[in-house]
Image (cartoon, rainbow over all chains, first blue to last red; front, side, top):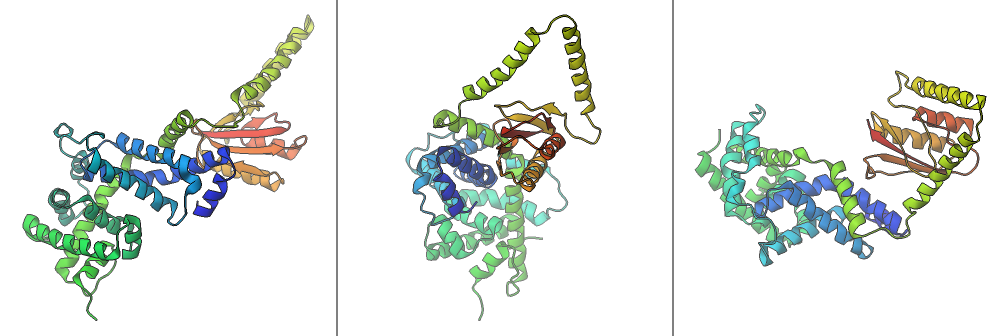
Length: 197
Length: 208
């Protein structure tokens, strides 16, 4: 659903607005859930999928109240992603205890355990080394913005201008971030994996 | 002109070719890319958009109740009127008419059983006015799209909901202005419903 079609339906009244918001939720939920869960993990806020869903629903309920004033400058997906990211970052800065924190009780990241357990022959030895050693080290050594930048490049294949808009940072900052993190990653790969096979 | 390390690295991470990059850089970027994609896929493995959508609808209804929505009571009243007519008819029966009525009920039962065609993926049931009529099928979205297209071919403007309702059903709604035609009845029968006359058609296809 594009911005214009969405706004047209929102203006048709409460019932159509509900339907439009519902459709938007249904279609965007898988994308937003992945990134929300990823962000919560990288901020060590939560590893529970339920928390990610609650947060997404919060954003949608607020959007339901405010969608008439949606300016349409970015796509709906980008707008919602930004709202979620800002909420998580604000939460980290202002009240880190209001969300369920990932504690030692959570044990080792179950995701990584799952990944390791799946002895998929298609996953190269090099990629397994990255999963086991490099990614956890990166998560400790870099801020969430940088990690998010890298993941957006890899998973979504975004260009510099697209990513600058999504993350609401100047392109120059983005390039500096990528450059700095690249050096760290290459050094980590060499140090932890002794170069890759 | 030679490209910078950063540009090569960006292309490699995004899964693009970078012929000017060294083999070592190519191996590092590929390993990192594979690892991140693998983790990303693992996060999304258990996502159930339909279940989450149902929970969201319930929450929205709770926290932001609908305004100007047709109330459930209105639908219930219509249904009650239908049942009332049947009850009045049954009370009016005397002597042999009661036996005939039972025979009729048995015949209807047999017809319902006959509706279980081996090719059909649903049980044919009578349409109930004033409420959503749920039909359990193997492929709800296919039934939804087909019914909407068939109604459109008859010149009936049908509305489909692109997401399931709170009961997980894919819905088709239409207003049938006059007495329904034989063609419409046949279409509805192919989707598991019979006996619709006219008015608001409201069908929800659920996964069997």
